[in-house]
Length: 245
Length: 199
Image 1 (cartoon, chains in turn purple, yellow):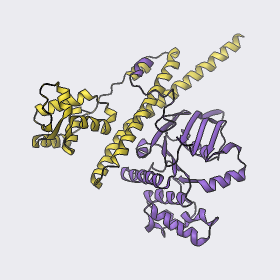
Image 2 (image 1 turned 120 degrees about the horizontal axis):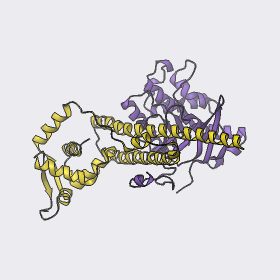
Image 3 (image 1 turned 90 degrees about the horizontal axis):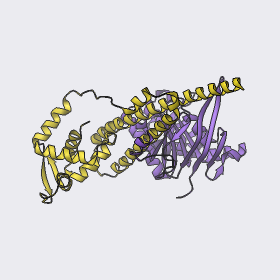
Image 4 (image 1 turned 60 degrees about the vertical axis):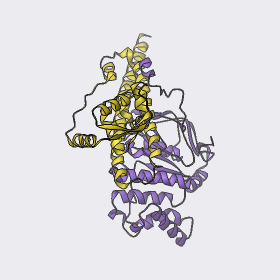
């Protein structure tokens, strides 16, 4: 098996909420490979967004190592980390732009700092077309439907052709049809562009088109850390349940 | 969920050999955890009730019922289709909740916590593995040519039900585990304080 694009090895992370220590991750291991879609299932407050921030180097782990594209994120300078994130990582969030902008401007925005206006808008139009909402280009964000916002958010994140796409629970307000369509789109994008997708979901129906799903609850990340592999502790043999009991 | 209804629905959708139907039941209704023998028994019953009929396969009169059902091809009869349509439109019955783990939790004592937490986390891992198995079965769906938009959406609705089953199960197990882990930590803190007081 090739090297993973992203790996979290034995990562622990907790923070203080008032007097209480909240354990977000305890000894968590996760590996994401090129072209793979991995979903992490967990309810609100389980630490899904913190996991994505750790994966993007925006938060440091208390223990363990995090590597992205061969780089140890905890050892990089701020400048090197910013460059790596700018080049390799796209982030899809359920919240859109705070100011009133057209969908096309929103998608072009991250490109304007690195390429000419003409190229930025050309690539933004292509990204909107790629996710199937080219007709929304001149619409204001506030006039878009929930599913269109999800798709424009994906266009915003893929316009720079990142290697890693982080998707933060965007399907929570979508119905069956839109959830299925969005999940299929992410799978197709990953397959065609060899992009890796780490997606957090509150409901596993949003993860059905993923290659793999892990579950995050009470600091424990459960499930297959590698495609087709299981850790020693990942008891799958159903007959063993009686033994455990 | 009855194995008979699941099998009849699948035969109506597409005729197939018994072994194919057993595989399709596993892929579509994995959470029901039907074993192969219950699928073959269901095929035998449906054939006897003239809801499905044999349309191909080998002459296997000398073999056992399950082996015969495995190796012959079935299709639905008009009576089977009518029966299934009637059932489809009838009111649903409320499923019974029968869960051995609930009993174990109900009767557990503080000293059982470490073991019970381990058992519950084991169940969580099994459920996440089952969800992954279900995802893998959907990978194959994508390769089927000519999938109609209507069928795709109905499949999505059914798939959401299957996913919802695992969601609810994983969520409940995680909630109980977190509760028990909290209780164990409290007990450990109390015990440390008592030891300090004695010392």
